[in-house]
Image 1 (cartoon, rainbow over the protein chains, first blue to last red):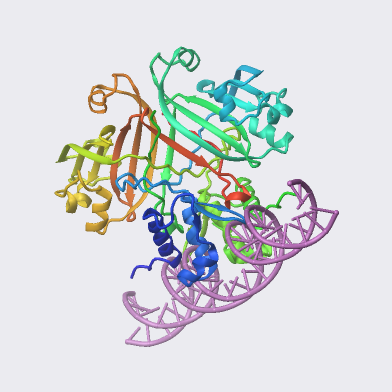
Image 2 (cartoon, chains in turn blue, yellow, brown, green; image 1 turned 90 degrees about the vertical axis):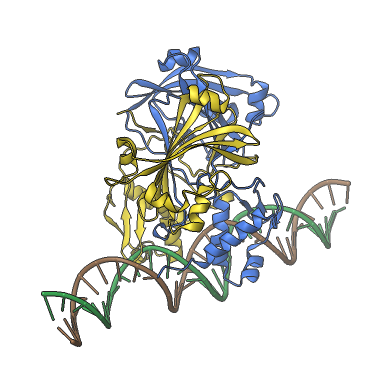
Length: 258
Length: 258
DNA sequence: CTTGTTTGGTTGTCTATACAACCTGTTTAT
DNA sequence: ATAAACAGGTTGTATAGACAACCAAACAAG
């Protein structure tokens, strides 16, 4: 016989359904652990496992001391697109190196200032690096850092050392969430020269925003990858008694045209 | 004052370090929950939270009734690339629809046969669909299915219904892991026509391999996305008391240039 | 009005225990 | 010999309770 679905999983499914059906609406308060305990007549541990799934999948945000909130954007699932996923990017096999193309302290443009959530008068560090694997150019990184946070390591050797490592070892700044977006672009003149590809070659563009644990923005970067050399691999794991858990939400896509 | 790191997190870090230092080696048995309880002198729940992190990050595999095994592939972390991540793809805002361009049963090419791990004599279903959001063409999907698995739903309406939904409702096949790879490509003639973009426009290509829970391959597909219309967003969540948990392994890139 | 304090509720962590489901190797019965 | 039953260890699930950390709003003091 098959193992029956565990309680926490069935509760998870019910709650997810409720969210989809707008019983619990976006940005509204979600029932507290104890309320759910009463509703479903199970222990708090079980509730927390169910809620944890919803949280991990981005349907809920929990705030200690405050409560749980719904963040689901009512969009209707497209069940045909794959069953959501947890992504792990694998590791490459190459000896890394880097070359600084440009490094300067500057007043931010309006856009950068907005992305980094800078206050008036704050400066940014702009760094353009070319990264190699086995001495072949793979990535152009164009990064903007909050200068106040970056100052302690500004004069250090950024070609030999990892920025994140230096940050970790020489400051108290700790990195928090990061948002990324993947797009496809054509190689312009700069990419053509530095990455040694033909003009117009399709490349991957990753835009990334990294916060600190304090909530301020540490870095915004636009990295351009040679798609022929570097692949992004991801793995998705639906519910499967073999591996503990992990049914993930549907859909791969987020639109953003305008 | 800052909140101290929780026990389960410190244990997780220690265990991860042990794995990296080869104290626990690949494919070897990892200590059982109860052994770890004795070693760290904490409750089993705490141990399981630590081990769960390692499991979710792919360092461990747990087998009910048998034990826990190390799967870490010793490759050297590149600490400069971001702190790994759990990815959740967001949802789009559009009314979905689809159009079948092509649907046929055929003998597989050598490559497809290999990807789907077909036995001699097995057939494939090839389906090409164009998918719309708000009636604008967004995605071309070129899919290959194991015909033995796909047979029960072959004659159903695949324009109105989701393949995965039909599969779920009319068969006992259940989907398991999926592997994906993201690349950038240029619009060729077909893409130009169907997606209504200029020739040479950079597009995203997602190659996907979906297994069943039984372990056989259900689908291989190559989907082409209009990158200007659809973005892939991902979020990475390192440890952060705000949001429960989730420090993920490093690195974004996997190389694959043979 | 402003500032500090209290209070109650919420999430986060941890403990201790129990049983179910499962696997493997051993023992027993046929 | 072969098969069935058993035993012991492992992971998976669930319960009940406790306290810590945190937040927001109400309250009190100046």
